[in-house]
Image 1 (tube, rainbow, N blue to C red):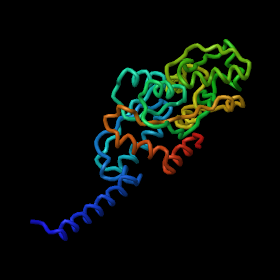
Image 2: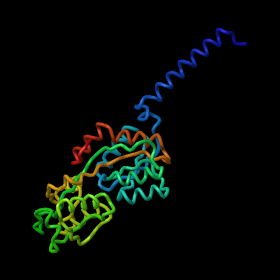
Image 3: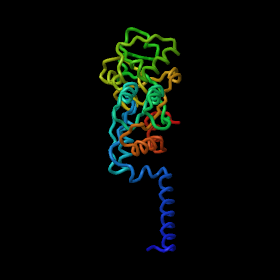
Length: 260
């Protein structure tokens, strides 16, 4: 039979244990400890391919046993897949509008966080064989031109800059994401295209970039959020925290993104 003194001792131990557990659950660093495991599936805009691939490796290194799996594509297409029930833990969009569609569908937990910004740049094949000089060339019928489809973020941004410049574009092709547009340039299939500055930088010597002043009229901001039906909620929260960290901010800055 336990004495009153014994009961008091047990109660004291339980109180201390509960207090320690409470402190641990309130510490954001705990999301980066042993609690994070398994696979985290991330749906991300195509323009994030290089940076997120690097950051995924950094995240895995910080969380041994965790595997980051990506699905890169047009933000509009990814948003639609999420609304239709595609299993994913995190969504990173190249524009707030596509994220808002997912929010409105009740598919996001918490508030999306803006982690980067991006603007357009003219990309031309190495040597600029089409002699492109600026945005005005997109209103001509002579050069072969590529743009993103208007329903995807890079296409919507292009539409805004053309409207700001008073130019009616004459594209020969419209592609479903920015990487497909960039491929047209690197293969020499077009004389010029509008892509993000980060894509020009990532392509290295394969393309040349031409800045234009109207790009400031259409800076895309990138939000990220953990999804409400995430199969791995703890890893999703940890990944979002990592993408909004100072370490990740430096990676985005180095890649040519603007950061908040």
